[in-house]
Amino acid sequence: MSAKSSTATQVLFDAPGPKGRRRILILSILSVLAIAGLIALGLWQFAKNGQLDPGRWVVYLRADYLAFLGQGLMGTLKATGMAAVVAFPLGLVLALGRHAQIPGLSHLVAVWIEFFRGIPMLLVVYAFLLALPAYGVNVPRFWMLVIPMILVSSATTAEVFRAGIRAVDKGQREAAAAIGLSGFDTMFSVILPQAVRLVLPSLILALVSLLKDSTLGFVVSYNELQFQGKTMVSITRYLVQTYVVVSVIYIAINFLLTRVALVLDARMKARAASS
Image (cartoon, rainbow, N blue to C red; front, side, top):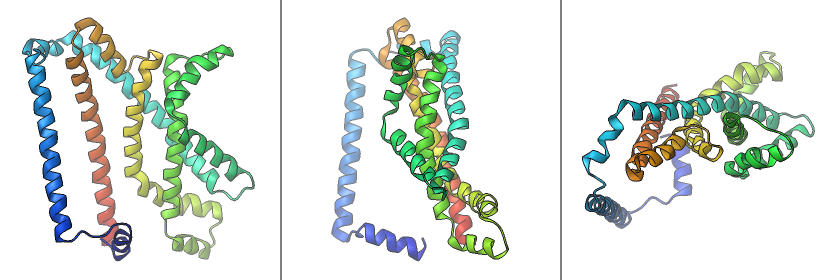
């Protein structure tokens, strides 16, 4: 850790002393025991009610059930991928607009960003599902989900890009100006490539957030994983088992994406430390 980050940490948090560390350790152990106890109690209750009966779980190994959930997974990945492909570049454009020195543009973009950052995505989904059709605007169910995902994610991603731009050392701008680069060339040839590398782990975490947002597809009856799980409950009558399986799929995907973000972050820190 650099001296600068160490100083920032000390300002934000007081380093615990021996008693503080002992108290933190005891609370951590008690928390783990409490969580383990709750899990054990839940499993005992499930076993008591027959929810752990193998017959209730092996049905999810059937080819038709796997194919049914696979269709939902593909719908989730399709919506998430499409939203990311549009939202991330749009977020970069919004970040540049807010960073621009054009009178009025920065304020207009700031209002747009703050509006979609502050509004719950569910309300935007309902706007496309209920409000717009009342005015004769109808879009396919896929876009009823994806467009709200794009609008909300682009606003949050814009702030991520803006933070990356501001994190690039000011000396880079001065060096670019010294060799005669214009402001435009400096931004697109010097600043942005470094900013994108800095925020890449955060973008992957934003992808995780998009994946979670795609679960709102059930509101518009779009065939994503959550909606398929809801349909499967009506078929199998196994509510607990279905949603456990669906949750495990989500957790596995989010875990892989998070690990990728952590690996990239670690590599970038190691590269920065060696430079």
